[in-house]
Image (tube, rainbow, N blue to C red; front, side):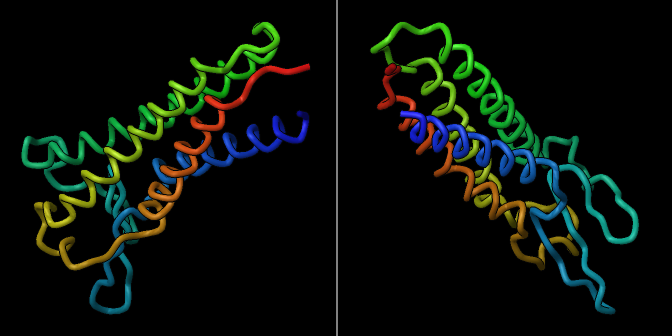
Length: 165
């Protein structure tokens, strides 16, 4: 039982770390600019030597970007809440009960990641600045998609897990 709990806790912590990195890091979109420089664009800023906000990111033209920002932040918060709820339930649940609430929170976190990354995938050509359209997905985008199955599997493991002695 201790090995299973350790594995589940590690899985949850790793998915939370991946969510934090993918939400915060500025490599959702990478553009090779003329002259050999590289421009990294995340959900908020476009960075080369200096970081500037993504053009028109606060307008209705970039509403998709605001939706991705909201879902990624919500998924990270839900993942953290799910971990704290798991720790509380670990000490409060009676023997034989399942971690249903933790599983629901973790599955919602996975759903938010999927929605955010899917919106970003569908709207990759939606940058209002023409120079940003000629790029490719960066490491943060990949981490978001990697964290999706991890949070989903973690939520499913909580559904199966029963509190034993």
